[in-house]
Length: 185
Image (cartoon, rainbow, N blue to C red):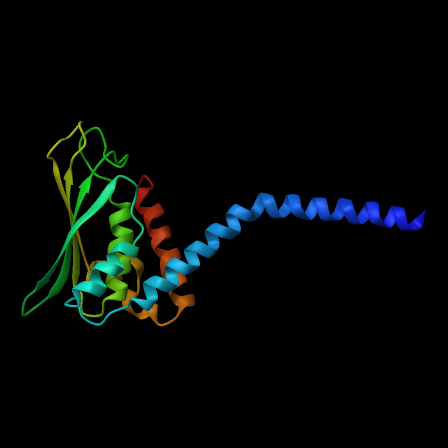
């Protein structure tokens, strides 16, 4: 009789564990995916913008909203500065306001990440061509310099890619800055 009670309790406990694992499986999977993406980004850290293959790999790893497709990447260099220009076409992106303004948050996030991972990049520019039916042909441009990124976050973003832990802190600070930028003043 005591053995049957023990087996029943074990079965209830196992059922509860399986339900708990089933309920949190998506969260655990999402966290694991984000960790892999952060590691992939750090593994593709680069010294010079001129390595186009690695640059495109890095850009393709960046988080961007659905409806925005990467077209081309151009390296812009001069005696005084080096940068990256990324061209996108926009299809059905919810981040365009009725007045035709584009939400800057995803571009701020990606630009700061690029500036933290490319040692000699001084700026990142995003060019977007709208292919949506509401604003066909409209063009948008967003540029951020390393100096602006450092000022916005309060420290040199390049210094935050020496470890996964520091990179995670940088990403958290970027998200905090985006929330702050989106808050009414």
